[in-house]
Amino acid sequence: MTITKKIEDLLQEQRRRHKELYEYLGITKGGYHARRKRDNWTGNALKQISDFFEVDYDYWFDDGTSVLNEANPEYNSKQTGKFLGIISKLQQENKLLLEKNSTLNDKIIKLLEQKKP
Image (cartoon, rainbow, N blue to C red; front, side, top):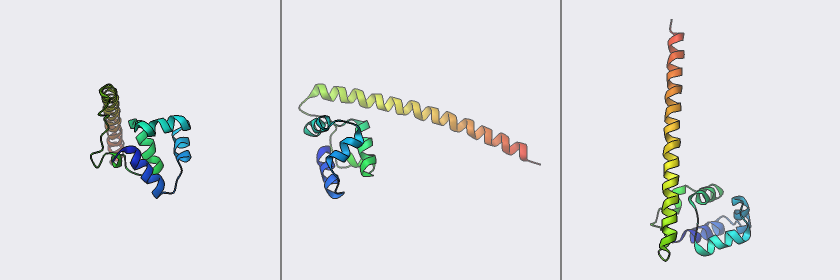
């Protein structure tokens, strides 16, 4: 099942309108319909759409839905680059969070040691 079909199904199930979704995404009606026609959704758009429908991000991929466009290898290459960029950014953010967590743990330990009688 395509991602666009899943979006259509959720709109129908939740009795929501396309207009609500494209306004939530902050894109024009034409841009939205172009994405629907090509089934061309970025990872960021899918995250926003997940929030809109209150579904997990994994919902879009849990049944073998392909994020690749088999008819357009150039598109696939661009998408792969985007995904690698997203993965790299998430890895950097994770590293920063781990460092902050470590720093907070150190501060908590120092505070607890100061309170010991």
